[in-house]
Image (cartoon, rainbow, N blue to C red):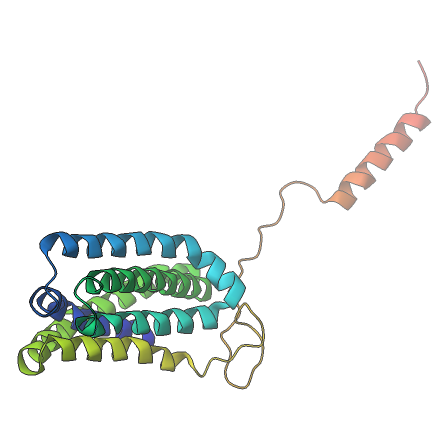
Length: 228
């Protein structure tokens, strides 16, 4: 729960400072800003394609912590782009947004799938409503803090704080040390529970053994009956 709250809070903290920083400090043109946002959309698409494979290969805990740490490292490139040559800065920011969007989508897909697998079916609505209320409640708080920090310390400071907040949010997942790749099993710390699996409903109709008994009885009756 803390990870789900901290990550969007750090993300919304950076948003008020981003456009101010890339246009005034870095000097990106409107066309270059559009390219950055296009790279972000492409990264989200790539992350959606890679999310299942990442969770299968890395395991759920490592996919969660790795995606958050990578997103934080990628977002830290943006405030550092001001020190790059003028022609290189737009490319660095575009690559950073591509990687950040891809890894955020990997995190979202993985953690939402995990939440769903651990929640009883009759509590899906309550769980999703509670999460959305808390996450979206962090949006105005992060936005206000980001605007205040940008006005007092500068947009670069707000971007650095947001990157650190996103990268360190994965620290809440450190206690989960699974033994298996799927996040189950005993480890050196508490493990993520195994997903709930609904039992299959009983098959309709007579059981296989009963059908065999009925067929045997019918055959015996046929053999014992007088011929016409």
